Length: 464
Image (cartoon, rainbow, N blue to C red; front, side, top):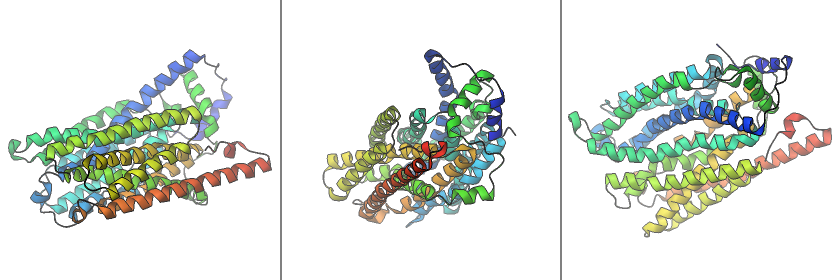
């Protein structure tokens, strides 16, 4: 069904070359693409991340007592989400290419909206595990699939701002989740249901509504977009063709084998892993960490918002500078340094709220600031539908193994200092810096090798 095979793109060479656009026409076309591609994907992932992370707010309410959760059961419930999420990311990308993005993504979001609604009616720990598992299953395709889709709409010099805008849906959801939970906390006892149940029920209903809208408003790949004229399609395909290959057909076992022979693909995945561990740790546990500072439930949710607001500002500034300079490396290393500095503060300062809160802001700015740059850098260094469908799923799936580690980093018995959690995040952040430098060295080595061999388009497209 409308598979965006590269032979479609390749066939455009037999058609007349479209006339070059004026600067004003290029801006108009870019605005048109932005409005059709980004907003719906942004809204979908806001809902996806809200549905995934709202359990962190529910855990500060009466959910543990009502379901009889003890010991590490809350952490296990957080972690079980990532088992199907990791396994099904690459298969989901392949299915999205086959069924088209607007069909596949709307089915995925409808599935996790229904599961979220059901989570509001669970009665025990087993029910919580089951709903968390199916949430992970249905959400597996959303994040990597969206990046895969976005990568074919923009050339490299345009991509970072768009990747960052989409990634900021994570930050908005993390912050908005706290505000929404603060409002819903006042619904405790309405119709005999606890406030944490209303979080799941209301957000589940909203997600189902977004799923219906997504069927009509999610854009497909450029050669399938009905809202572009034929001339506009050719312009987009010509503009982005430098980042595509002309290979044909479906992803095969041989394609997978070739992909996994390249050590750069392992380093790219580890770079993202080093970002995901602190991102999830603080997305899940910022309310819990803030609560240890002595706030009520509602105050805890409200004080969880500013660190994410600071992260949003950091992401937007880094994205602008990265596209302006057509460079990624400095904008991975700088937030990495902020992350390490923030963790150092949280590990060593335990009796000064203002300093601790500043450290929390630095951690969020560092972790969330590096995330979209790492994804854009790695994904835009891949070529064509095959590499990007495998690569985006691979990177996100390996990175999200950090989602299994993160819930066990901040166990209640370690409160309020959470030294093991901060130490784990510090070690992973340091690993990220080392792997980023190794990835850079491999790019430089490949550039040098190709230059000595006379050069070719593929390796010259590798960016720093």
